[in-house]
Length: 195
Image (cartoon, rainbow, N blue to C red; front, side, top):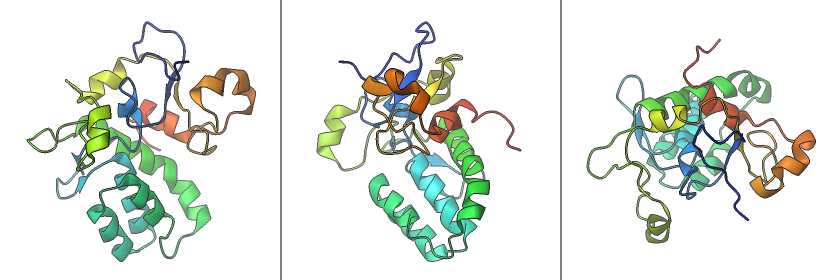
């Protein structure tokens, strides 16, 4: 059974995404390799996950972890580093996390680097993953906007905060029990003012 839906706006259903290796909608994943620069052009982030965890470390005044995050290739390792941020305060993170995710997605979808060696969708150094990911032609922003007004749903069965807590194949039957889907909302609202 196909666990994603087309990202075309002509399909009326939700766009389910999760893994960065999905050839149709992997570009929506936080782990999708698409280096982009910050507003000042001084830092390059490999993925939106790198941006989010780096900003988390900076928020809690942990420059050592922030530097490690920027130097780390794997988004999985970056996620782990994000869980080790010193001085972490849950209440503060709850106030800032959505704005951080939205800002990271706005940068990802508008400031992707496409110079040689930084082609959108091409992972760094992972030969097996290279075969799974199809480089994307054109603008990530255009691809995101082509989803129209369809719901973007992070169908991670392991995460009920950033995702819905269900695989795409099980999502519709469990709609009443969905998690918060904060990462589904992040790309969708990336271009709206953050309050």
